[in-house]
Image (cartoon, rainbow, N blue to C red):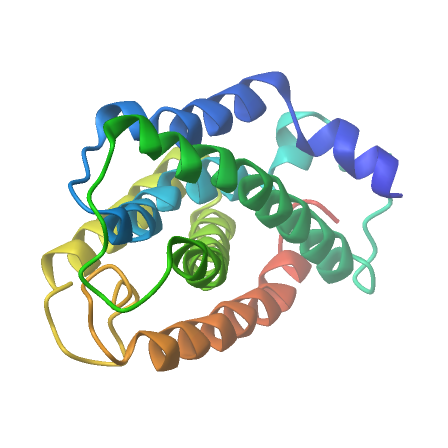
Length: 212
C-alpha cells in the first residue's frame, strides 16, 4: 500500500516543484538574524504544502486510476491520511536543508535568549501545523469545487489574508511564530487540531466524489 502511494502521489513535476519551493528559500529570502530563519520559512512552506496536497484525492481522476484503486467509502479517508502524512514528512525532510542553508547569509546572533539549535527545533515543531493546515485546506477546497487550480487559488487567498493579519496578537494567528508573538505555541496547537478536523470533514466530501 505505502509503495503504491509513493509511486502515484510523488509525481516528478510535483516532487521537483516542491523541492525547488523549499530549497530556493535561502537564496530568495534574506534574514539578518538567525532567529528569523524559522519565521521566514514558516510563512513560505505554505507554498510547498499547497503544491503537494491540493490533488491528494483528485489525482485519481487525473490519472484515471479511480476504478483500479478500489477506493471504498471505508478506506478513502485512510488513503487520504497516508498521502497527507507522506507529504508532510517529505517537506519536513527538506526543511532542515533549507534552514541551515540560510547560514550562507551569515545572519547575526539572536537577540533572544535561545541557542541556534533550540530555535531550529522550535521551528521544525512550528512547521508541522502550518504544513498540515494549508495542505489539508487546499485539498478540501479542491474536493469541494472539483478543480485543482481553483483549490490552489482559494488556499493562496487564505494565505494572503493571514499574512495581512499576521501582526494580530491572537491565538487564531497561524503565523504567530513568525510574528514573534508569545501565543505561538497555543496557536500552533489550535491549528493542528483544526487541520485534523478538516481532514475528517473530507470523509463526507469524498463519499460524494466521482471517485467512487
